[in-house]
Image (cartoon, rainbow, N blue to C red; front, side, top):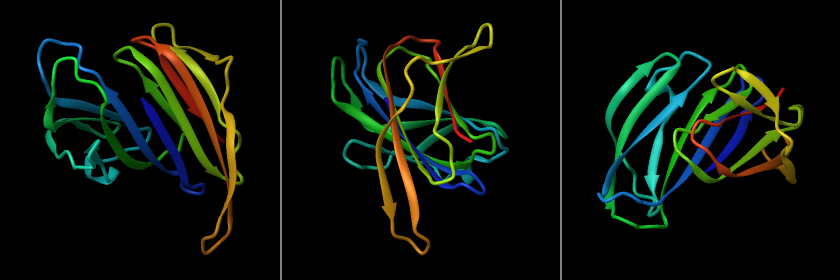
Length: 186
């Protein structure tokens, strides 16, 4: 799993998320659909998030069912254009959306085991260096991770207003079901 976080507007904390999921079917049956979950710390409607889901061929996966559309929690299903067959590898899908993150963090809870979890954060000048925490959801204990993000690159983007940007990367391996990580910026 890879999550690319781009802080687009530091004033209103508009953040664009691009979440890439690689799928391996280890079950006996084909996988026809996937359930997506998005939690926010601001009140939103599903339609406010500008959700786009597509497969490895860049073919859009339309939302087939909305399970939850509460102010802070969204859950919905998309159907694959072709099923993921037993033992099939190298299939993936991408979920993109954006939201104003007034609390200035991204949190990911793992409902399944994950071989590799990579997070990149692209942020403008004026945002502090991101910090990663692991959260024990049973005790709510928050502990700073030993491994913190490293700077991948600094860049200058020519827009109407020049903007210095920094991109950091963090990676974890062998993530177990139930683990939770929080990425904070100020």
